[in-house]
Image (cartoon, rainbow, N blue to C red; front, side, top):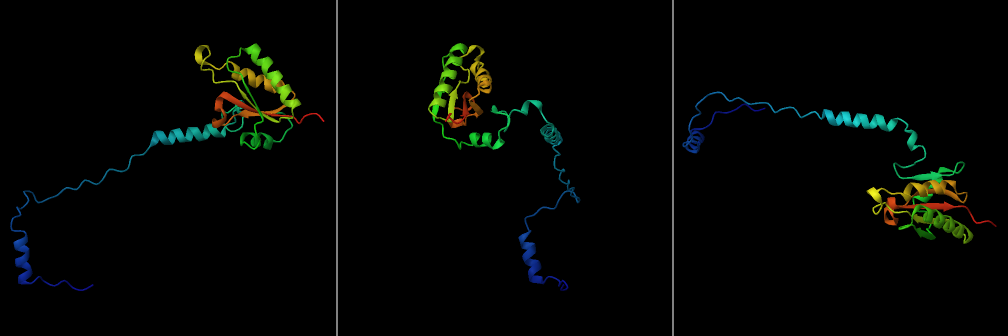
Length: 182
């Protein structure tokens, strides 16, 4: 480090000229407040901890479901990959049944006839549109739960899952059927 040299007379004159209009401060001390420390998001941390703890606890209602709250079912004894492939769209939908406007008795008969017909024709993957219940009393889906229950009792059904959004989302199910009898 080089030692400081004293300013020349010319440099002092330039400085005086530059600050000639300045007024002296009325006080000789300046108080600088240090910046406040960043806020600690305590509630967010508590929420994240609670969510993590809840996700680590097994929920008995999720045993039949895979992938969140989307309804799905797999016949006992089959590999989980069957359901995963169905959910990922690896099966081509070969037939579709739309139950809009049907009451529960009509829907059950239509579903039974549709599944039998699909099985006879060798169709393995079918879409069943039960609707979202927007036209039902209380806007609650009536057929949604019924169709799921009926599918689990049908011997020809191997698995089902909720359709992807582009295929009907929560208003439809994809069902995988057994191979047709030889």
